Image 1: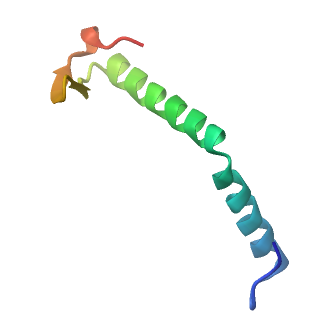
Image 2: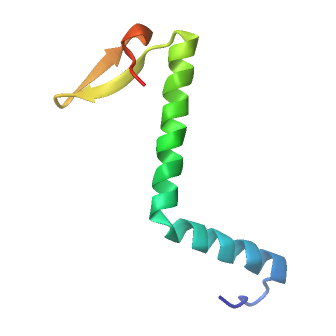
Amino acid sequence: MGMYRGEDAMTAHYRDHIVETLADKEKITAAVVSAVREAVLRHKQAGNPIVVMKDGKMVWLQPDEIEL
């Protein structure tokens, strides 16, 4: 991609990198899955419950019920 009016080369580089990264759906999905797993693990380790959907309803899971 070229530079836009008033945009410097560094800004264009970062914009192009962001556009390229957002185009990689598999990479985004992997990052989200990893982040959610890490958040659930931290909740379990801290002794905090989480909310999940089960049979279309929101259900609280206690830390000892959280499976990773």
